[in-house]
Image (tube, rainbow, N blue to C red; front, side, top):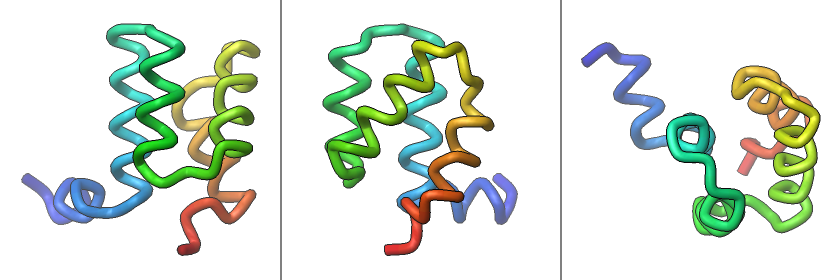
Amino acid sequence: MSTTELLLGTSFEGRVLRTLQTYFRRSNDVLLRDSLWATGLEMDQVDTIMSLLDEKYTVSEIMETLREQGAFKK
């Protein structure tokens, strides 16, 4: 496992990334919404993610949007 993988495995950003990646394997909107909220995102951030998914954004585009909004600066 690389250093980057280890850092992502324990960081808040990494948990969000893995949750989004899981959605594309088994798309379940209700489960995704609950899982994202459980990772520590605010409900308005979860709503933003869900709307971006409806617009067919990729995981990397969604993560970049969250970074720009400062979601991971906790």
